[in-house]
Amino acid sequence: MKKVLWQELRRTEFEEAVKADAIVIIPVASTEQHGNHLPINTDANCCFTIAQRAAEAIDEFPVLVLPMVWTGFSPHHMEHLGTITLKYDTFVELLTQIARCVHAHGFKNILFLNGHGGNSAVIAAMRFKLGGEEGFSSVGYDYWNISPTSEEMEAVSETDKGFIGHAGEVETSLQLYLQPHLVDMDSAAWAPGVCGNSTVASREKGERIVNAAVEGLVKLLRDYHSGKLEDNLALWRDEVKAELKDQHRYPRYSPD
Ligand SMILES: [Zn+2]
Image 1 (cartoon, helix red, strand yellow):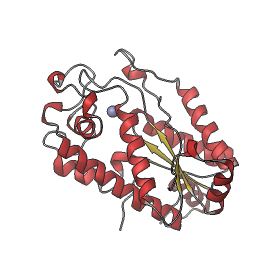
Image 2 (spheres, helix red, strand yellow; image 1 turned 45 degrees about the horizontal axis):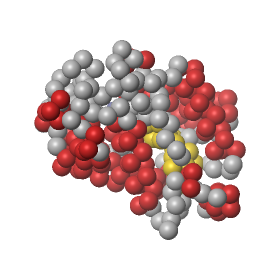
Image 3 (cartoon, rainbow, N blue to C red; image 1 turned 30 degrees about the horizontal axis):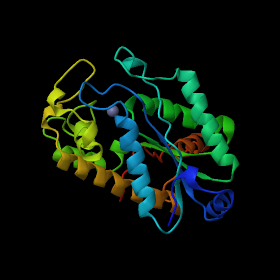
Image 4 (tube, rainbow, N blue to C red; image 1 turned 135 degrees about the horizontal axis):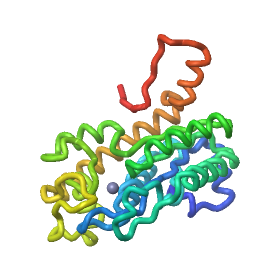
């Protein structure tokens, strides 16, 4: 059976994966409070599940998923119980070292899949660092910003209007689909640290959003492997260097 989880491969299987030009997904999320009704691994569970399902759906080339980077940058959640955050510098260094190791083994295609809003800007800055100081490129996306996920979120959400929020309609729906046994809908109400309306969440909405996210990520991985999708930060740097002011590219991924 095809393996997609990095930790399950043997040394010889890594050799084959490098030869086959595998893409390596580094899933990054958080361990942080999600209101009174959702488990603390909400971001990590959503991000990792989407990464794993997309990797399993691709047969033309290998896609490997690293073990979850389960803690991120969440100082703004520390006043709520259960949150584990890293300091900014520690988080950047952790991601840098992981990516450096992956690259050192010969993998040229590295994709950071992010599952926590507080990480987004940090990952973008860290990817600049990879390009500038470490000399290799990567791509990075929030799972909810990969088309058609955002469109599907907009279509199914009654109150969040396509906004990912925090422990609101979207994330509660995702958890009702992915980990229903860990959700307490009797406690689903606004509370400090919640953004959005969790009471209108449903399993069906969650399933549609996850399916859209997997579909979008599969297309993105294929585009990355074929060379159609490149490191937008490196492109930006190159463009500035070449003073090609008339060719602008944008960091948000949108398929044809
Ligand atoms: Zn979350």
